[in-house]
Length: 369
Image 1 (cartoon, rainbow, N blue to C red):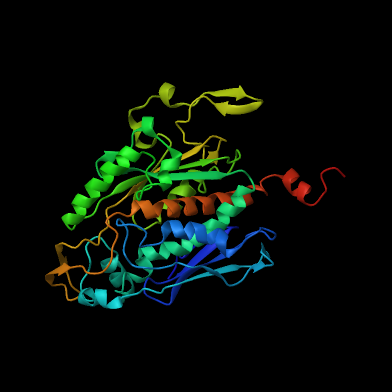
Image 2: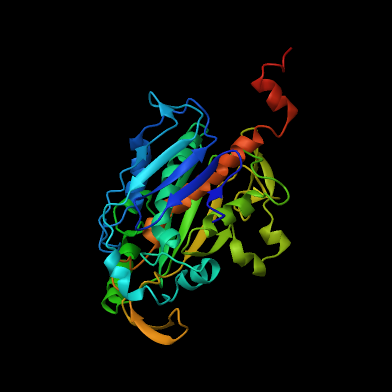
């Protein structure tokens, strides 16, 4: 299977299946000397792990990470960092009734058509559980980026028809409700809406906002490896994500050049923009402003209503999905979005270090000779 790795210099490979022995990742290219312990990673996995509220799957996984290599005396060694998260709560029999049928909204049909085989126990590599490896690797990238003052703020801004009100925005509120919403009123309304969907054996889509601050100017490349293109690839690779907008996103359709351009000005000796319609990226490169991402997350496809489908014999059948499934994906996906963004920015930061001759000369102490 191709496509389990991402990144160029800061490169990550995830491995494992939903109902296998475990999930994990290998991080290649992390510089030596970064202070790192399992607790640094665990706090991010705790934001993603199942069973944390009534709006997440009740699969009880502790998601305890083990660092198997690449760290000595609490610092990275510059060698590959191998991470493992054991699976401890698999109930594979929940999927025995669908082993020969394709779940609507899932990767089953495409997987079976491509490989002639599929792991029907929770979707195997196509399961949302694969993202635990991404979060573990992303936690290392975030720890690295902290050294450069790069920070992330990620939250749910809409659940079904319920949107947050910016006038009630509170960063502190994000961790106080089960939906990671920065508006307590909207969170209560969204919880009521979700309770209604759950009573109907249904699920809901949602929207995530990710704000990234502190990126230096010039991350990303001007042609194929644009920063916005790399972020889009990384985030849309998350199974439930169906769209991403950067800056003003699709609203630029009704904009004009005069309304959409971000005018430059000098502020405290630095070049800044008066507005941020571009979302912090111009010409594929960061411009020093806040990177603003909006991500659309589809409703959980595993719903408990009877659904029409087709089996491996190409017969029309119906199915009812059993097991433990989230009625909404977005709250747990916030940290996955953050992790994937961090991986791309860390990789771009490292690539940018060799974009100029004088940068290389500084590294080798040659600039002042």
